[in-house]
Length: 234
Image (tube, rainbow, N blue to C red; front, top):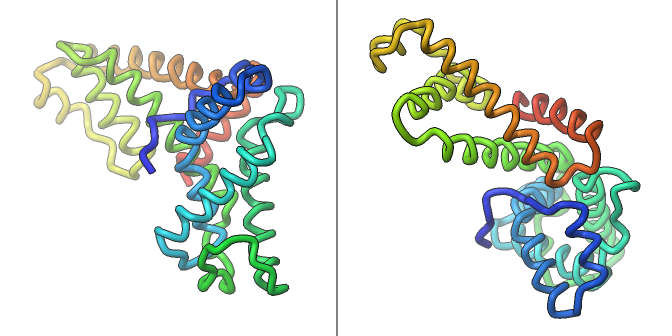
């Protein structure tokens, strides 16, 4: 299933779902699902070790239909009830556990293949969900910063930020020495440091903007930032 860069659903959008026509609600839900699909599927895949790509997609689709369309999960969502991320993750986990239990009792809730569900998951499903979510958030912040750094020194500044901050943090790459950067970009060290500091600030602002699109308060944004830092280093 094709997905957009990051889930940009706000709590106000979720509240609006309750006031939409059936057609408008279905379209809005489809957009919501499209944004969140990677994290949902990551949790599903981790819940059933060895599951095929096809079955993982089928389970994810089954969750979407059963919980988001048929049971209107988002109708019970509200900013006062806690993080949207937590609500979605908990619902996915309960759905997967119910599917496993239904097999053990001989009850089939769907026609989805369950050959691989006997084995315990090798990756914690909730961690898989959170890691996928963190990657989406950070990738969207990266995309927004990159769009602002496409020419001249700003483009150099973005590349320096990647080589000294992002790639080491996200991929475990070695931090590129300033001497190498001076040679590559023909910019002195003082300018490189200033570029890096400015780009760090921009990234921080835009990362906070991305989080604010699904977090309900300033304190929740702060908590999500801390959570992202942990997940990005996992």
